Length: 376
Image (tube, rainbow, N blue to C red; front, top):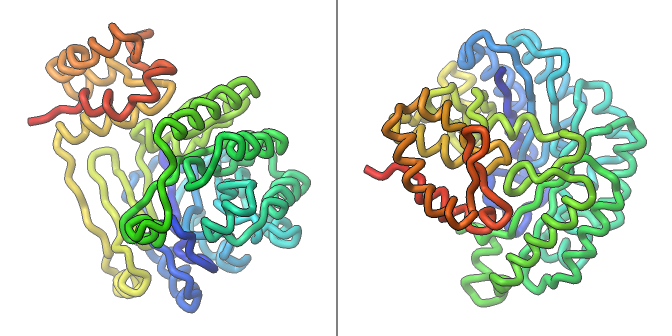
């Protein structure tokens, strides 16, 4: 199996916390779509002859694309790849883009999963984050998507915001659970260098939330979502009825994927590659038949570290038999030696030849994964 990721770098406005490659100028959209279709042709051999099991339109804001944009991209994918009949095909969307008319339009395409970037149901928090929608618009968008036939809906939520209290966070969770959706991704606010949020932090205009409160918010979320039928299958992701994000799970499980568009990353099973983060240089390179990408050739130690990092994040854990098969007995024994202290303290368990974080292990997961890394 393999996946395709399509980066759509266009946004109406830029959120205060975003460090992804995006642009608010839409004038290059036509050239961008043409370049995506050309890149598909140029890189159709990248993942061999494997069936495409997942397609993910991410961003940026994919819901800024129009009907003819999707027609061109899907036609190009179908000409160049074998797409499984039951492929998971996801589109990220902003709530204010999901009018009934737009939802009806995208139903003409094989999208069967929506990921809606809500972030908060608190209007003051949404204003602070520079989101374009209101709490009510977010709820209306989810309800419209359900009425429009989507039965696999994910939303993004953000916690650890400045001035956010546990009570506000609980009300956000109340609103999310009331929507009766299938998937929730939730991330702590990060002060990334180069963002407006980071500049405000450096100026002292915003103050990060207390670390103990952040931990309490995370713990509360785990308790509330678990008791409401959600499975905590990855540190930041929760799903009902086993409707995990198949595409994102492929990243954690080491599956091949092709990233299309400026700044998109790819993995061929051995090495990583990424496109240059510039729409103009990307489109110019593609139009001249030159792939505007860089390649990182991964040695065995790096691949082992990736295997640990991605596996320990999930409920499936690190498969010790697969570890030994891929990297040999020495690295397996190294892993077992370094994880022993965490097993003794019940932060990690070994079950069916797999190492998995326990509930309390999740809270120190960064330290655990760091200690299992191979260091020359």
